[in-house]
Amino acid sequence: MVEIVVHDLRAFTHDRHAVVDDRPYGGGAGMVLKPEPILEAVAGISRGEETRLILLTPQGRPFGQAIARELVEHRHLLLICGRYEGFDERVRERLCPDEISIGDYVLTGGELPALVLLDATIRLIPGVLGDADSARYDSFIEAMLDFPQYTRPPVVQGLSVPEVLLSGDHERIRRWRRKEALRRTKARRPDLLLRADLNEEDRRLLGEIEEEGSC
Ligand code: ADE
Image 1 (cartoon, rainbow, N blue to C red):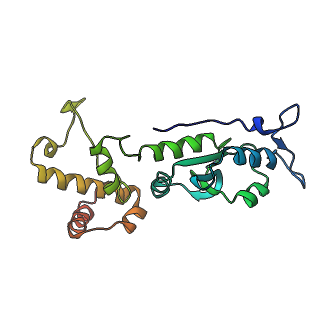
Image 2: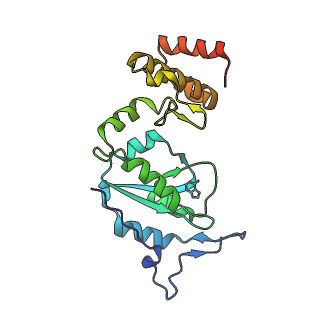
Image 3: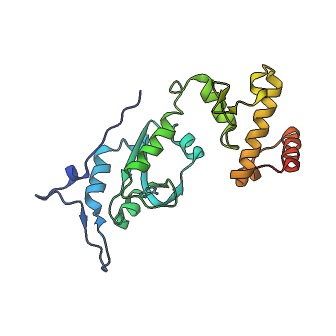
């Protein structure tokens, strides 16, 4: 079971207006999240050793499948979502959180990044996905993009499903899928191919793709 609890930082303030931000020392645009509400919130919510503390920020380490696999091992994640221009630096100093970014762009807050991270992590909990999905997932997608998928009907607006997929020949289908995954990965994410653990067959298929010279 997964339980998600949303905490309002304003509940950890003590002034009449429940202020959580203030102007930056030294001047400049935007507001900075005050340290005390965050430090109090973490002190109140944390379960000590059991808690993995994460700060969502564009300055964090890039989120990816490997981090999702790391996070799913923890029983309690505490995600701090920023707003405004950022956090008072003392939040970092005091809490030493794991800082995570979901990409090189700036969103208005850490809420969407938190949801992205949760979704990618929760689907790795055993039982959340069907067994078939999770098995395929781990062995494949991290090193390689997915092969093209088709479903019925066999022809739509003049576009046909590749003949091999209707052949019932499992070995041919496996080979075709591997080759198309390689083709796609080479075209779109050559960086993944460099890291991939390619076998003899993969190299042969890549050679064929090279000769075909298609997109
Ligand atoms: N907060 C704002 N932008 C973000 C990003 N790209 N990743 C994580 N947290 C953020």
